[in-house]
Length: 520
Image 1 (spheres, rainbow, N blue to C red):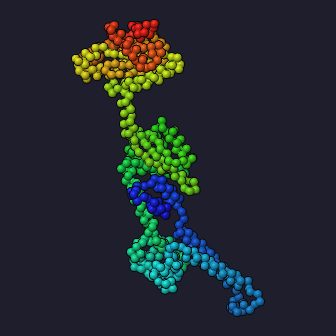
Image 2 (image 1 turned 90 degrees about the vertical axis):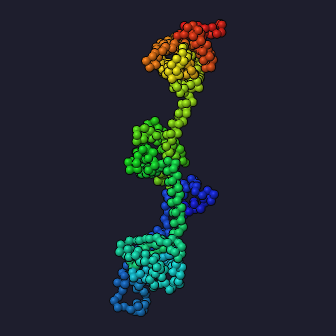
């Protein structure tokens, strides 16, 4: 907790209410994940060790006294020319006991807390240097008095009750209280001994302040997480212990009690296309104990669909380098993803027919023509226009015209191969790019299928209308080396087909005379 106190003291007063993520993680790592032995525990260990040593010394003294001659006086033993062996042993043991007692008192005097030893009757038999400060009397006046001399009033009653519990249960006891006299928080611990008890009272005001600040910081984090719809979970790698926050489960459509805290609940919900990549990234971070990383993947929702999750992973470990754990924050970004996909779709597709627009069509055409250029292949571009379409709009209205365009787009797409692409330029004009064709024969076959499909009547309710297409075709690289040139020449060929009466297709033939047309 001392580390967290330092952490909070370093907060800029101008940044009140904000947390420094680096300092917070450092404090978390050093002071929560790596608990250290405090003064109380060290003192307790010292007391236990000293009690064992004193018991051993008392046992040795009893054995030494047992071997002395019955009724022998100290003067008679001293008159012997050589001291008896049992007497030497007794003297040695007494010296060792005094040295151990002196060492223990030194330890107790160095402790920064009040230490009091009481007899079985509740009288003070020892107190360290801080005892007189708490009792506000000289040390000699406190020895032999009851505990109210140091712990007056209501606090004294609490100490007496704790002593009673300790003596009955033969187990340590503790309690905390706020002293109005000293304006401090104190923690009092009582340890039972063979002939009484040891009482240790520590000022914990600083710890209480740090705990309060930590609670406030965690409360702010919890509130901010809920407001931002941010879920989090922790994963202890050593034993696969997992904690999923309620908000994390809520993001997947579950109540807190519906989803157990097991790592498989996360792994099994990863989208099959994301699973391998995500697990590899996590494993690499665990092996290298690398810094934070951010990743996006899909998790299965309770409704059967998937949600896009933006996850920040933070690897934490103690100073010994073991006990690695991950703390992960999750943010559901499905709506953001869907909006981005929608904007991308709008930017690259015709909203009426769903076909690619001019931009996506040109991007595809450049790709296939570059490939054909490297492999010395051919690409065909077909420019399609629907004859008498204006009459449909004028007679039946624009909604009827839109239905004709939508149906025409589907018929053209069905007439082409999967590797070809058809798009709408606008109005009743369509362009199809035929990749990797063998020559004029492949282009002729595709154009014939489109003519047959578009020549069938279009149903408008109970009425049927017919719109005949005119198609112009240009071939890469014979009729142009760029998509703009190929579309232009295919447009020229389409107008020649329209002038010839419509319902047919023409190739743009670039021979000795530029612009010569070859109708079909």
